[in-house]
Image: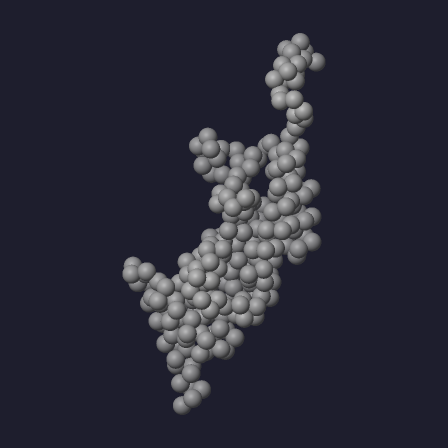
Length: 236
């Protein structure tokens, strides 16, 4: 050990608070992915490709993505975040993306964070034990809680919010506008051949959309017409 480094260590011991235990970085993002994240998410049924983990759960696709910052400002440089995505595996409805889904097309999304934070980033090359425990906790508990809202198409339809406040709270939790949450319920009801429920939720989607949502409204009206035509064929 050089004289300079030994002097620095002595200085640190003198200036740290009494009782403080100096914590060295435990791992970086690559070792975190290999030793912690991959085994944990594998047990939950996710399959990995690079830093993206996917699974299919009874009609929904779930995604966990570890995103490196592309922002070179001092606040985000050299950091990463964890994003959750979910989308019903339904196709053919106006405004919904075609399957298979591409990046950025998932309807529901959430960035993982602790203590009610909206945005949290960790250092790519310097993850401390406290960081690792924090991430393990999020992937063990918060991840399951968030994906439980879209555990299956059947459960999603059965748990459709009935009150406006509950609808707004659920939409906020899933990271989507209330009008899109209503339209998702409408599309899933249509997939399950519950056409009356689908029409009701389509009307709710139109009521919840903003005055500038012309394309969205057009898609929902096209959806309603298709359901109306199907009902007319069933009841000539």
